[in-house]
Length: 116
Image 1 (cartoon, rainbow, N blue to C red):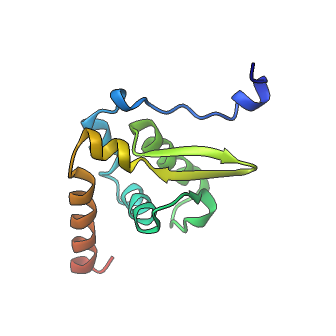
Image 2: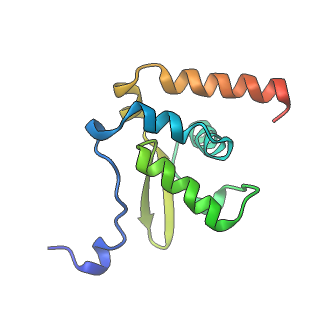
């Protein structure tokens, strides 16, 4: 049995079958959240929250990560004192084939076009 101290650090994530398209699209509709996902996709590995340099407050950054996690876009786990973030690419690709790649490609083209 797991001690309460350990289980209290487990963050809730939707199971693959609970991930909804509208929640994913909502999560990715915000420029800061899309930026987080683009960075995770580019790295292809987990990154700690502190690795993201977002032009928003810490509490707003925390909110963005929570929205992404609750939508099923990212997985967050504690490794020691660091909260690590990873893109749930396998789940998203299985549920919505081509969606993530299309969104990332469109975001990259938009960034070139508008200079962001």
